[in-house]
Length: 182
Image 1 (cartoon, rainbow, N blue to C red):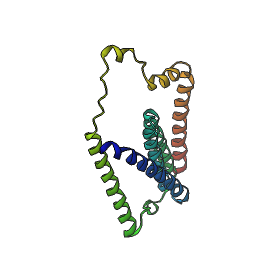
Image 2 (image 1 turned 45 degrees about the vertical axis):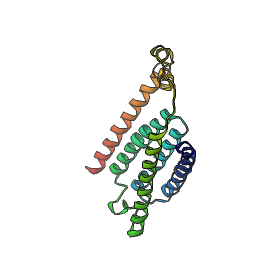
Image 3 (image 1 turned 90 degrees about the vertical axis):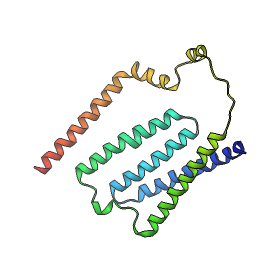
Image 4 (image 1 turned 180 degrees about the vertical axis):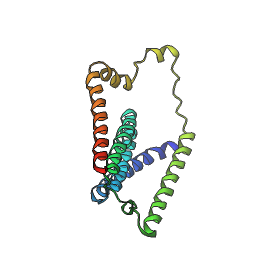
């Protein structure tokens, strides 16, 4: 019973997060406030990360959250706040009680999905053979080693230059903001 439910649940969630990503991207480009647009872009990036995880690319999904929804958005919001582009009155995207009711309904529906998934995953017995220690040691290091190896060997100079370039950009933004406020 639980095994028959899982593929339908998977397909439903795949289309749900695809729809969330599509709707979030439309809302992102229609916002007048850059801060609200950045927050909607975080919703889009998180939905894309969920889609990557559902497709079996866990590392790409994790990097999507860490790099794009995390670091890039923090830098973007830092620049927006530094340049005073966002006004506090424009930050509230959900206006009126209907927006809050719809947001609450979506939150309860996603919580129900999470609970249903946890119940089905607990009741599934896959009967997979457990690998021995020799088999674990003989396996390649995985996808992370495949990405990290070239990054820290062949492309180390480009990686370090990128980090220095970002540091210079942040220092330049702070210096420009100090000159303008003085």
